Image (cartoon, rainbow, N blue to C red; front, side, top):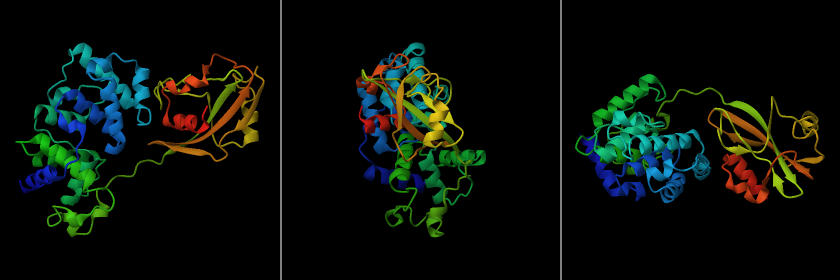
Length: 346
């Protein structure tokens, strides 16, 4: 088909030089695809290189402590990806003797691997004719064919997958899949793509109808919930602080944070001090409390916005076991906490 030939020809000339394109090692391809989920190449590349360097094989990753994996992942967000990465590495290493599944259907059984990732690995590593569909692909196909079906609907998921499968070059599926992803990332960009240099500008329906900015169509998601986080940053005279490991299935599972007081709304300084006066860690403690950030920090996650304040608690002695502030950077923390640590400069 002309579309496929034009696309792969464009790719052969313009593709970026990226390390995971120099191999068909399924471990490396899998690593790159998991890291690049919801992450741009520019941001993900240093993480990929760090993981390959520290964990050269799937066995190295499987044998690592989860805390080390989370620490290396710090800053990428969506930490469930890192936990799933570690779980799948253990499965491949211990149950599959280090051999990755070599078909789309078997790859889907790995934790954290969905349709897109399974298709990418199966086509790139094992030449299986299975089309990838990610945000870039949705954008390219919806514009080229002028498809207004919402991409985040069940109908849209099926429609675009079927179309991509119809278009894929059966003789070189890996090349086609990488080409269409690259095209969406560098040419058919979300905003203000340069259509004047696009190889499809004479056949793209959205371009001919002046609809580029209207596609793809997406159903609006529910409004993000507001949460109010107050972190208690203890500092003792012997230069120690308190870190707690988050439990449960919520955000930042198994990452470390300062003791947290969550409130139903944003409180003024006087109101908050009154509220926490009887906090378990402060009951028997002589302390001096001050607000670090006068302006509330708003940390935006996919489904919630965290309105955050850091309260400095200076005390002679910690009310519980602490960690030296000199060791605080050894712990895997959310980027919100990490940014505070760097800014406060313990």
